[in-house]
Length: 402
Image (tube, rainbow, N blue to C red; front, side, top):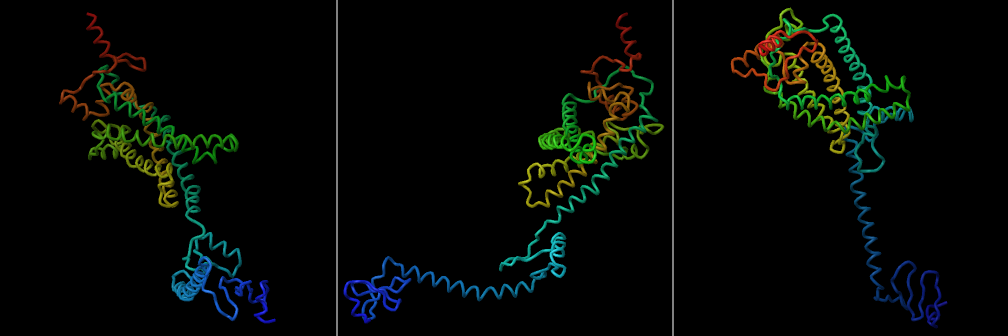
């Protein structure tokens, strides 16, 4: 049937290629290009659809050209990399691939333009191994050694007495502010030490005693408390260190005090307001306390860490520094209370007995006497906590009565 017979006003299809409209024009299927009788094309493009289709064809052509140019170049570049496109052991099947991934070997994705990536962060496994195989057993052994040392001290040395007994003449040693920041820091430190030890050793020690369910509740409370009081410890530390800095500057006489065994020697080496042991504790608290504070900030606020490895390293530093401080804090607490007579009242009342000062800190007492600063202002009346007589206090009372 010819094209002319299609002009009767009814639409029909010729050879399935051309749709003829009543006005003598048609359209190729899938395109918006009108074709009129006699092979003429109508230049009335409807709504710019022709431009859109041509743009898509042009974009597809550009993409094919870019792919043809850059993909071979990228594949050639991959062959020049130190890590080949596939570094995994495929000879042993999935088991070999999984072994290589767990060892941290990089693998290349199947997509182009992607560098080799580390599928598994093996540093996490290394951190777990250091924590469980090094910090736990060694740290636990160090803490047990500290407790054992205190038990031996209590059994054989018992208590270092004041030579000649109490004089009854008090000497001011610590200000009210110094005592306040000391007990504030000590209280926060004890809370953090207990909660930290639960988190570090609780799984091994507490689960066999109280069971997994109870330990889960205890560990959760310890974790929340540890995170809460961690920033408080930083504030306390920043208040404590400047308050005691002046008299904790190291001198050569402090090394002599440590070398000769301090108050355990037959004749205690002379020292200033703080002896070598006290200064050692101060500087340990300064160094390891700041390490705990800095690492604790990362652990409390992990979003500020640039990468996960920073958190893992911070946790190791945090745990090691905490074990060191807790170990020395155990000795400091015992010697500062039950181990040495007359020392605790310096931190409770702010004053010590003159004979105690002359026995343990003679250079400090001589300095006070030379400056005329030896005073009992703010000190309570001389009372022997052991219930014995205080000769000087009794004589002063008798003189006042007469």
